[in-house]
Image (tube, rainbow, N blue to C red; front, top):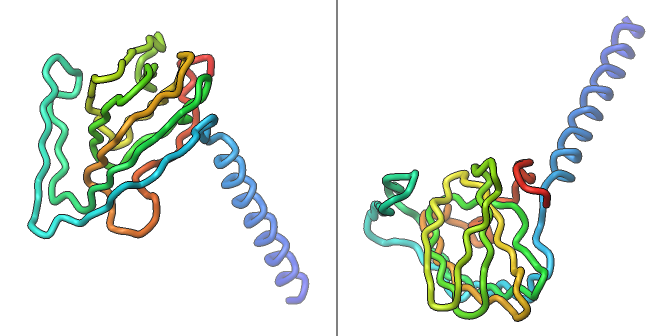
Amino acid sequence: MKHYLATHKLALVIVLAMAASTVAGAAALLTPGAGVLSAAVKARAHFIDRTDIRIKVKDSLTPVINAPNAADTVVQEIVIAPGGHTGWHSHPGPVVVLIKSGTMSFYDGDDPTCTVKTYNAGEAFIDRGQGHTHIARNEGASNLELWATYFDVPPSATNNFRIDMPAPGNCPF
């Protein structure tokens, strides 16, 4: 019986060690940002009334972005130095992004050719979120300042509007 218990304890230790190394290995694959000078949350609020958000982007591969019964909304100001980037990430829900200054190079994790889409000061776009992996890079010579409004963020006091992701493998960075 002692041998049986010792064997099962050893097996349990091995399984737990493997699980821990798998989690640590997965975390090591995440790509946090670099050169982010600030990422201040300017406001966070919860919808009081049931709110369904539907966004239709014409000429998009995603015809309708739907966030039924959206929870929190977060507004964030992000400043990225030249050569900096956000790291590969996603969001729980759709995001409206406004470029205040500088130029943003946007790479889509679903694009097999890793073609850059460039946004300049005064331009805005919709990121569909909901698992869409992407990276924003400042490939210009001056700071990039953007404002993001995140919709359908789970209620919480934490910064759960950004989900770090591993590089998808379609881009060299």
